Amino acid sequence: MDAFSGLVFFAYGPALAILWYFYHADRYEPEPRRYVLGTFILGGTLSVGIAFILESFLTLGGAIQPLLPASAFYVALVAGIVEEPAKALAIRWPFKAGQMDGIMDGLVYGVAAGLGFAATENFLYGLGWGLGVTVMRAFLTPIAHATWSAVIGVAYGMKAEGKMTSTASYFLLAMFLHFIWDYYAFMSAGVPAYNILLIFFIILNLALLRYFLLLGQAEDRSRLWYYWFKRRDGL
Image 1 (tube, rainbow, N blue to C red):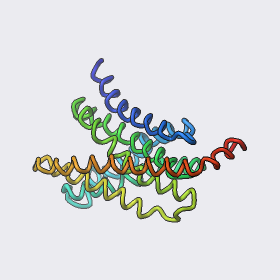
Image 2: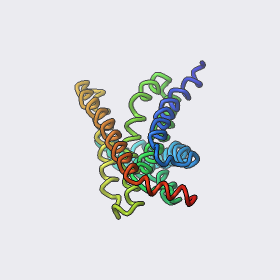
Image 3: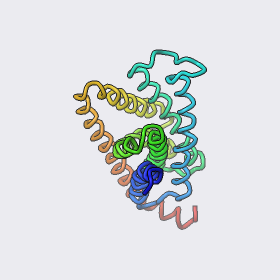
Image 4: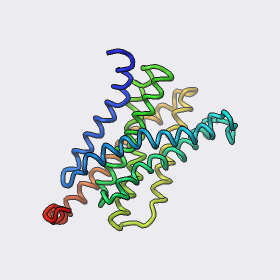
């Protein structure tokens, strides 16, 4: 395997494996594959492109100087505020298409958008910094991005079934979780002790995904009659 093939494999392979798991965890009413893969692709193209452009102006400088000094706090804050709404644009595609009707649907599409974003981000990091960086990130950022986007996806799923009218609080939670992860990731470069907090955040991300999964499956089991009628009527 040459270096470029290895880069593609470690950038997209782990993300697609995680997506496969969540897709098949949606046992009672699996989502259309084209919408799930389409959301993954949008997360890895449209969302990444929008985030890159905005962050280029806000943190990297160039033609326009950054608004504030690029401290760890500021860069992490910008990442959370920019990237989560950017990924939400991918989630809104199946939402607007009427493909969501509950928590499990929102989880699957949220995870798909986050994994697509993480995969392309890891690929681009590898192009700039080498295969080793992509391999290291492959075991960390897909779960992190999937969790943060899942928070927003679940909000859209509940909104689609009429359980909420505003997703603002879920957006804020996703942005905060993203910010706090990035901040301590940056700080750990100078203070290795902060890696303990990163381990805690990894466990927290896994716990949130597990919680949403159990919540979504429980909701689906309570609505088996609805799915039966829906399939019978060809909806």
